[in-house]
Length: 53
Image (cartoon, rainbow, N blue to C red):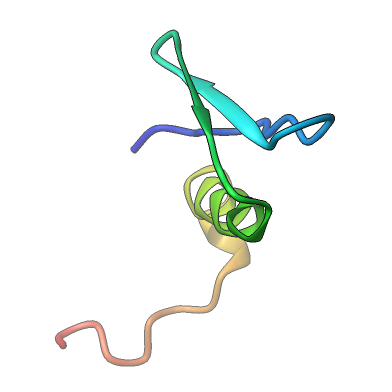
């Protein structure tokens, strides 16, 4: 339930959470951005068709 962005991509991609800087591979920048989008704007995602699974 923590927003991780913004991801700084000027050098090695990284973000800071709770005062700790985490470096991530470039391939995971989209994953971090998607997780932030899920928390900050859940209305933009379709409803889960199978919520009981």
